[in-house]
Amino acid sequence: MTGNNNYAKVGEYKPIDMLACAAAKEVNDGDVVFAGTGLPMLAIALAQLEQAPNAVCIYEAGSVDGRPIDLPTSVGDSRCAYQASIAAGLAETFYGQLHCGYVDLAFLGGAEIDMYGNVNTTVVGDYAAPQKRFTGSGGNPDINSLAKRTVFIMLQEKRRFKENVDYITSPGWRIHRWPSGEWVHKKEVYGKYFFGGPTAVITNMAVFRFDENGLMYLDTVHPGHTVEEVRDNVGFDLNVSKVGGETSPPTYGQLDLLYKKVDPEGIFLP
Amino acid sequence: MATFKKISLQEAAGLINDGDFLSFSGFTIWRRPMALIYEMVRQQKKNLHLFEVNGGTHTEVLAGAGAVKVWESCWVGHELYGKLGEGIARGQVEGSIIVEDYSHAQMVARLLAGAYGLPFFPTAVSMGTDILNPKYDMLSKAGLRDGSNPKIPVKKYDVAKDPFYGNGELLMMPAANPDWALIYASQVGDEGTVRVFSQTYVDAEVVKAADKVIVIAEEIVPDSYLRQEPEKNLAAGYAIDYVVECPWGAHPTGSQFFYDVDADFIKNFYQVSKSKEAFDEWADEWIFGVSGHEEYLDKLGINRLQNLRANSVLGYSTTVKRGTR
Image (cartoon, rainbow over all chains, first blue to last red; front, top):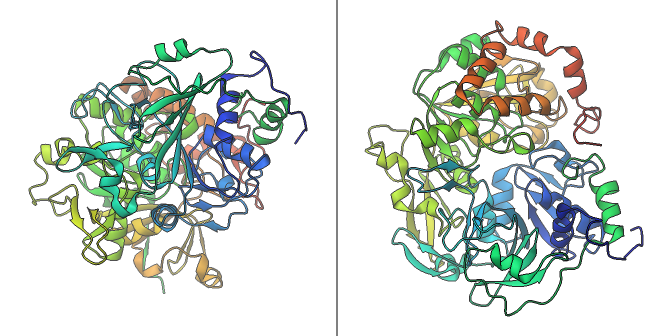
């Protein structure tokens, strides 16, 4: 730590710095964290340097509790496995770690999200005749199914925060029970395998959380943004009755860590 | 005793028939059997059915070349170096490629069942998603779940109650047993023992699930060396049918402890993959414009390759420029 815990002012940091710092705050010391490529890597590395030195990271390609000394560029990267406790494969990470219930926290992304935290990363339009294809599910729905807490990191745009997403790639708090299609709480579908679900959505404007009914509400707004601005960038009727003020901006110490220790090569933080 | 047959890349690609059901080693942009993929494109393979936990640069080369008829998977892209799988996406939107989406762990379940000789594998992952929505079962819509193709299960998945502990409903994912596993491996012993360095991805499951296995190996080493530390090995020699010795055979994807991902090569490929015309021009230069793997390496040049070479202690390149600083 550089010891400088003063908050940086708007303009002294980039939106991506805010995202990384807000995401890092979600990590508790000792958490087993399942992370994807990009911002999640910055968040977990920053958290490990700050409040969560005993948090461990699993990358789905096979590394368990790696201790990279150079930032990985993807989850399959050899850098992920440096000094890992286990370097195995997907059967280990998805079944030996996730399915059996070890995972406390997951960081995931998405192209579209609805008020229950259902996320689309597959297509725009009708799946059977799509207008555009995204990357696809990857491990997103698996991790989101069975992690105790999931944090989504997304861009704040009206077309991304939708009443109904075009395709439910990743399960939120209310989902369909297939093959019948009945619309029920996640608990009813997962039964004994219900471990939790989405707990936060962090965007370039705000932090959202979910109430006891699994409905998204606005929690904090980042410095430089307003509740109205956030509301204008959400496509459904957003609950703003619980707004708890401003999100803490990055500290100078955190910015120093991000640019000098976590990503000194400028891979995700150009 | 070697049980595998040592063959050339041309012979290996020649074994694959149009319409075959294929799976691959690796993960996104790591340890893909690229040299064999290029040779398959040179030999103009068509109507391939790809089954893979995720796709990467190899998938996009095949899709761009018009070699793919069915893609069963769940993700395709080039990680940081190209965010979408443009060739697969174009095929899906135009209707020239049948895309059947699952999730990573569901695909792993299908391979585990195939690898262990089981008809299905139970799992609780990704329930409640549109992956399970019956109206999005694309192989069924295409009339391909009628049982006539032994590689395509008659259902995309099924649901069953836990009969033992009362844990409720779980998914049953059907086994996958590809015609071919196309594997890039770090080392193969002269008796066929296979070793990969670092994360193993689903390489072992793909080897075991497939009817026949072709390995393109970075190097062939004495089996006695690999047998000094058997716990590090991935597969026994008797599981391997054909081996091609092929240094740099995973380029532009990375191979831990040998070379890093060639980010510039993949970034450029991603740009050309956005249109058929640009892809064709690229393929004329990098696939059809060279006689084979040796000429491809000559074209890349020693300095480019040297820059990607992994540090032998860390397992990755410490000289390649990865970011903006």
